[in-house]
Image (cartoon, rainbow, N blue to C red; front, side, top):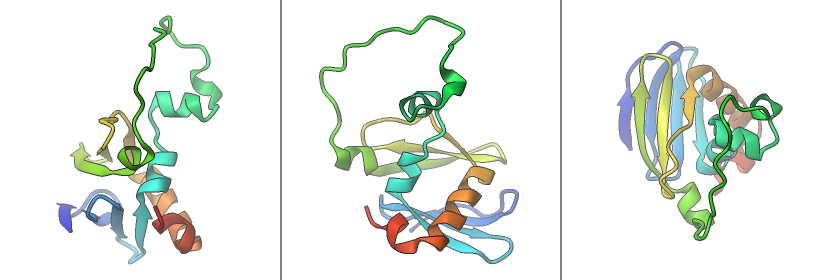
Amino acid sequence: MERLTEVHEDAAGVSRERGTGLRVTWSDHLTAAIGSTPLRTHCPCATCKERRGDQSHAKPLAPKINRLNVLSASREEELDLIRVWAIGNYALGIEWGDKHNSGIYTFSHLRQLSEEANAHPANDTQD
């Protein structure tokens, strides 16, 4: 396990678990293993939100560039957690095997994912 941070807001510790997800320990002693699948499924970047149907990005300020997507990454690459880094005192950045890295995972977002992971442990840790 790679140690990422000691204290950020309510998070007491975060570690990356060999590319399969994150283990987050909170100051209230809640500990959760959040698998790569729920992390990637709930990526908070604008592109992923739009793909999920989030209407908050339905009317962009700038015109969209239509890119031809010739090669796409495999599901394994999309879920391979390559790198994690701190963004200020409020969030983490994650780079995935397909080089996607624009999601800013706030600690409040990670707390929600932690609570969901503990409520449904079999669903969230399997990738």
